[in-house]
Length: 226
Image 1: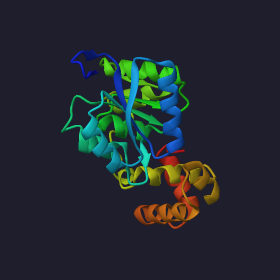
Image 2 (image 1 turned 90 degrees about the vertical axis):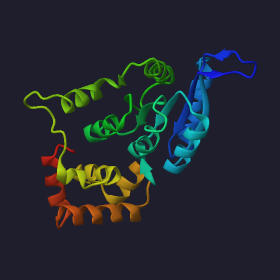
Image 3 (image 1 turned 60 degrees about the vertical axis):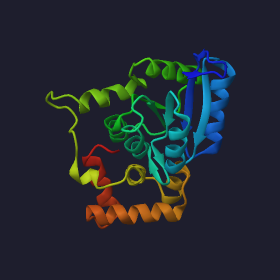
Image 4 (image 1 turned 180 degrees about the horizontal axis):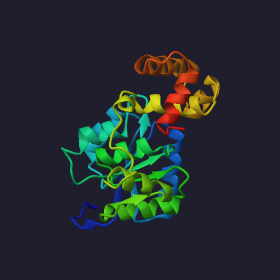
């Protein structure tokens, strides 16, 4: 909510888009602005650095935040912005529905997490709800959060030191590798190069002290990444 030039209160919700895919940002902007008059896209960014600078400058009401970007992820944006601008609300919008991604970004301070299968009207409703203080999750993701923050027997562990060694992107690559994807297929799925996939796999092998993809698959399966 901003103040207009004539001093009147503008009741529209100012939204800032953070995603490293320009076409996706354009699609979200079009969806929100075409059908939802009370939600206004005030800015966008395709990297962590651009996001931090843009949010600081524009001070939007709600930030739609991608979880994985080449120079970092949503959790890094949250880490740098939330202490400085606690009134800005963050809603994660990601292709990933992995439990560890959901939990990591919620722990960092996001108010909700929805996947990119959401419709334009559903997304606008989610923006309104987090703006008014609600927590919003795509249906099957809420259970991950309840488990992570619960002390009941059988709840998901609060952390896994071995898993915490991996970056979010390395976990994405590992998950697809464990599902049997070839390097080229992983590259296509994550919009990265085959060379980058190879680099991530080498890093995961080094960190986990495994020797091949078959050992990595078992390791990932044991940690419910698959």
